[in-house]
Every structure is written in C-alpha cells, then in structure tokens.
Amino acid sequence: MTESATNKLANGNGCHRTSNGKHVTKNGFVKTHCLFQQPPKKYRRPGEKNVPYNASLYKRPFVESFEETPLIVAVLTYVGYGILTVFGYLRDFLRSWSIEKCNVACEREEQKDFVPLYQDFENFYTRNLYMRIRDNWNRPICSVPGAKMDLMHRVSPDYNWTFQHTGHVVKDVINMGSYNYLGFAEKIGPCAEAALEATHKYGAGVGSTRCEMGNLDIHKEMEQLVARFLGVESAMAFGMGFATNSMNIPALTGKGCLILSDELNHASLVLGARLSASTIRVFKHNNMQSLEKLLREAIVYGQPRTHRPWKKILIVVEGIYSMEGSIVRLPEIIALKKRYRAYLYLDEAHSIGALGPNGRGVVDYFGLDPKDVDVMMGTFTKSFGAAGGYIGGKTDLIDYLRKHSHSAVYATSISPPVAQQIITSMKIIMGEDGTPLGAVRLKQLSENTTYFRQKLREMGFIIYGNDDSPVVPLMLYMPAKIGAFGREMLKRNIGTVVVGFPATPIIESRARFCISAAHTREMLDTALRAISEVGDLLQLKYSRRVHRAPSVSWTSEESLLQD
Image 1 (cartoon, rainbow, N blue to C red):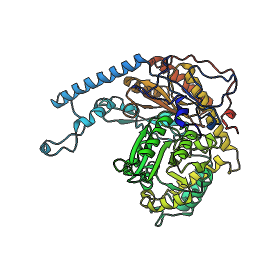
Image 2: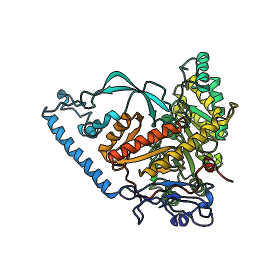
Image 3: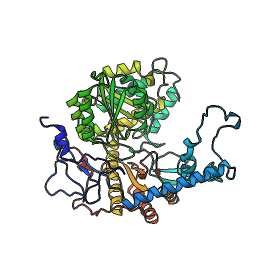
Image 4: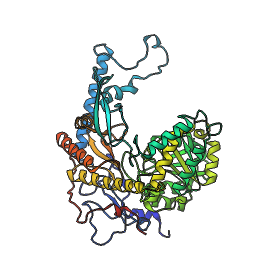
C-alpha cells in the first residue's frame, strides 16, 4: 500500500452520520455504499454511487443502502416521544396521589430513610412508554419456531401490566422473526433424528465442566469439525453465545491494551470489552476513515499519560450487524489491521451459515483467507438451529483460552443432543452427508433474501442494510407505529419483530425481518401482501427513491465470488 489509506478513503463515502444518524447527499438521500469493479453498463439503483477507494480488495458487488429519514417524519417522531413523555409525567403525578394504581416496584415506606435501592425515574421509560406496546414482545410459542409456528393467545386486563392465556392457539403463523436462516429449526429430518440418538446414548445433560468430567468424545468431534469448517487450525465450543464474547474478550485483553469497537457492536461484545479493563475507543459504523484515524492515534500517542506503546490493539467487529442488516467491510479492515499490526476479533453470529457460497460466513463471502482473522467467533444458535458459540483460530490461541477463559473453566459443557445437532447440520452445509441439501438451502436463502428486499423497495418502504443480508430492517420511525405494526401483522397471521428506542436511535424504530431458506415463495408473497396492506394502513411507505426492475434478472449464481 504505497498510497495513504486515508487519502484513498477521502475520495469515497465514509458513511458519516449526521445528528439523525445518516449522511445526506444533495438530493436528500443517504449515499449508498457500492464497492466493486463495475462492468460496463451494469444496472445500478438510483442514488447509488461507485466508491473508487480500495476497489481492488473486493471481488464481488458490495451494495448497502441507508436512506435518509424524511424531515417531516423525524419531526413527528420527536413530537410523538415528547407527547408520550408529558403524559408519562402526568400519570406519575396521578400515581403519586393514588389516583391511578401503581403496578411497578417501589421503595417501601419504612425504608424511606435508607439509601434507595430502586430509583423511580430509572423505570420511567418502561412504565410509561414500553408498557403501552409490551404485548408485541415475549409472545409464547408452542411449536417449533420454523417457517411457520403456533402462538398461544393471551389478553391483558390491565393495559399490558399482566397477561392471561385464553387457552386458544393461533395456528400456522408465518415466522418472519426467528434467526432460522437455513431452516434447521425443525422437529423432523436428519438433525432431529441424530439429536434423538445422541440423547439415548449420552442423556440430555453433562453435569460438569469440560476440564472436569464433562469432556465427551462428541465435543471433540464437534470442535474438530468446526475447525475444518472454518478453515482454521483449532476451535473450541461454549454453551452460550453471549458468554462466548463476554467471557473470552477479558481473557484476551487487559490493562494496557486497546480495543477499537464498532459503534453498533452487540451488547455481548460491549460487555466483554468493559470487563476486560482495557481502554475502549469506538469508531463509526463500518467507517474505515474513523477506524484508521484511531489506529494512527494509537500508534503515534500510545497509552494516556505514559505514552508507552499499547500492549495489544484489538479491532472488534461483527459479520452481519443484526439491527442494521449491514455487512462488515472485512477486506478493508484486514488491510488496515495488517498495515498497523493490530489484531482482529470477528463476531460471525449472524453471518456464519448465512453468507458465502459455501455458507462459511463473511470470510467466505469476500473470498478471504481465514488466517487473516486472528479470532473467529460465531454462534450455533442461528444457522445451525442449536445453542452455544465457538472461537476458532491458531492452536496456541485455543490452548490458551481453554486454560484462561471463564466460560471454558466454569461453565457446564454443551448438551450432547445440542452438540449432535451442530455436527449434523454442519455436515449437511458442507455436503458431507452425501446429499445436495446444504447447497440447496444456501441457494434458497440467497434467492429469498434478494426477492424479499427487492419487493419491499418496489413497494416504497425504506429498508436498511446490504443487498445480500438476510436481516432486513424496515423503518417505522414513530413510536405509535411500533405497536400498531406488530399487532396488525399478527392479525394477518404474520409474526414479526419490532424494535424501538433505546435498542435503536430514537427516530429509527423499525421492524426486523429475518429471511430463512425454509420460507417458500408463497410464504414470502403472503407476508409481502400483508406488509403492503399494513404499510398503506399506517402510511409507512416513506421512500422517495424511484425504483425500477433491473434489465437483467438476478440469479443466485451472481452472488458467488469470482476469481
């Protein structure tokens, strides 16, 4: 790299955020990231730009879209939250005078002179805003969470403070919210049969840690298979995906180390970084200019006060960001990591199994060498239909974690039926089961993702993320529309996930769809019709872009990396 990466990045779009979270161009839209070597006369959606910097690092089209929040929608969203806040204070006043019943926890009268353990204001948002739409979450499911599911019907006699089950079951709800990317969440088929056999052989639980009496042969087989699947020297598995991040990052870094974390990293990564006692600096989401600036400052200035060199610099990113639907710019991050001699921690919770021609995650998606990623982390809870997480890398790294990771030393081993589910589903993806089922599911997921995203754009919705991401956020914005969208979709037998503040920026509430290979075209069309109806009812079609169909139809083969 003879030319400064900063100069290269300065020629393109760094995805800077304005006060409302997006970078606005002259025509009122956010610049769309499109990094690829473009053939002549290739169709592009209106508003997208070719970004010239580091184009040689990308072997395939890389298109991400983040349309700006319309100004009137942003204003009305703030007004909506303001009204809810005013009424919240009014209701708190009525509760303090016992005019309205208070259903939340509060300090006892005889403890009023003690230091308070519970601050009423800390729960203001929960009791006055969240409680209004609480019925959209924690819905009990009474079936396999596959492409379709059964929900237990419930009602609330006190405005969502408590729920009562009616005994009625809502049948065949199309599941658009579960992370069942490859459709392995099923009760019949080779995975279920193998898990049942493992239960008969080993039992349901282990009752010990790996370093004591919980190290079974099936665990070793699973870890060897994971290492081969990832293309790394060694791997180890953990019983919980969240703990894989939160308990292993503290084992890798400590005082005197620097962690550079993407601003949209998952809570498990944030918690792990905080527990490590390392210095944490946050760079803008997927923004290579911001990351390189922090790397340069870290090299030039070193540690605060002493200016000694950092013991270790660890870049922490995700493969697919579960709220944005965006894909990490891994080729550029690896280039920066090599340039500044940092380490890279890659969380592939959502991307493993869901991206790449072979389903091996974002590294496979970009055609990169797994050895360029120092710590490869992922979970089995999504594409594999199981539970737990893994870390892959060099043998020295894994041997170190086996001795120093709290999640390895103190946590109970993975349940044998779960381990067998992981082994069977992974072998299917790799094609080692002797059938083309894995390749068929990977192709189906790719086609479903492209079809669903294209149709939503044509309908006029604002959706975020990368064109190849099976996580599809549809923007709702206003707080009242969060609950209304979830309820209206359920009336049409579509199960969805809706998300609002504080999980997202205050004016960027959204519905999040997760596409699965188990979804048939008929299911997707049914869901799309319902989404369009609800979109018209709630006036959610905010997009101001002009959409037209590509002149050449897209095929799943185009998603494969070309040499």
